[in-house]
Amino acid sequence: CTFGAADLLFHEGVFCPTLTNASPLLLKAVDFKQGEQVLDAFSGSGAFGVIAALHNSDVVAFDKSRQAVACARKNVERNAVRDKVDVRFGSLHEAISSEEKFDLIIANPPLLPGEPEGNLAAAVFDPGLQATIELIEALPAILTRNGRCYLITSDVIERCGYNISELCRKNKLQASLVDNPDFGYESYRVHRIMPRRPKISTTSNRSA
Image 1 (tube, helix red, strand yellow):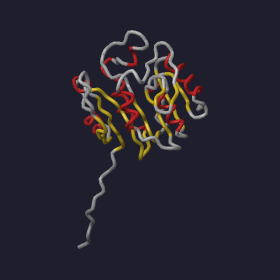
Image 2 (tube, rainbow, N blue to C red):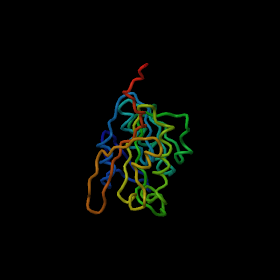
Image 3 (cartoon, rainbow, N blue to C red):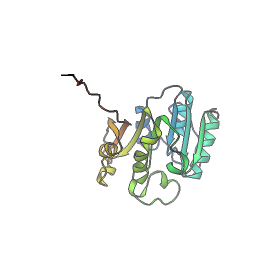
Image 4 (cartoon, one colour):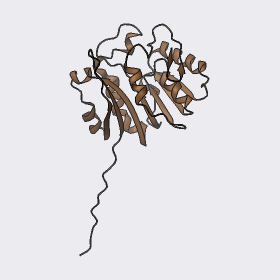
């Protein structure tokens, strides 16, 4: 399929980003810039990483599905950005070190709670939605000072008792809602998350 500027092929068991409204919605929100350090989290086919590389950014992409990693590497080759994209196998903590910093993080995690049965289901279901929670907790360490993360969630996460804004506050982050469309069966939220900047006091000390 064609997704943004990326020309993609798919292996069996790898999710296509045009099958639902979530990935196109996230793509619409992301402000790609040239020359950045980019992380494509839960990369699947590598679509977002390829698009970032086509914007002349250096990209790390990771996924815990071996089929997805193989597919992403094929798509990196197909779009002639092999020198710009490093595709890694593993979870966030396995694939990314806390010493690595990113200007832009694009996160399209599994959106529904539940036990996945098979590789394709793992792109949709995540027990306890822990991938999303772990990402938010890791952002203070891996975002640059002026970095930003675009994270998509479903309203299902709120039914599970999580509040993204509150989770961000607890981790010294600030979150704003970029988009919040309702598709009837489900609502999506695109969050823009950045490091919280300290408030600058305008009160000056005066000597008596």
